[in-house]
Length: 101
Image (tube, rainbow, N blue to C red):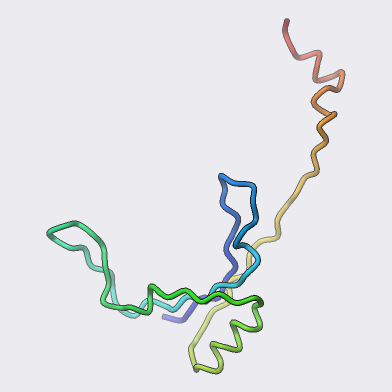
């Protein structure tokens, strides 16, 4: 399975953007996951599947994969859609009419 190069998305429950600017290189899974009969934990005999490398740019991550002769796939993230909000809009007349006293 080829390696993945992607950018982490923003956590849905948080407004911060920490960790979303760097690119992640994740090795592909070469061994299937198995469930332990005793504990029920899921594990794998592939130690590379646990490695995540972080790069400042996509080009740096691609250069690493090419230098190490690793097949890779780049996953583009969707651009953020930001709608500006104005605090004063909470007090517009048409919104106040809907309030019941």
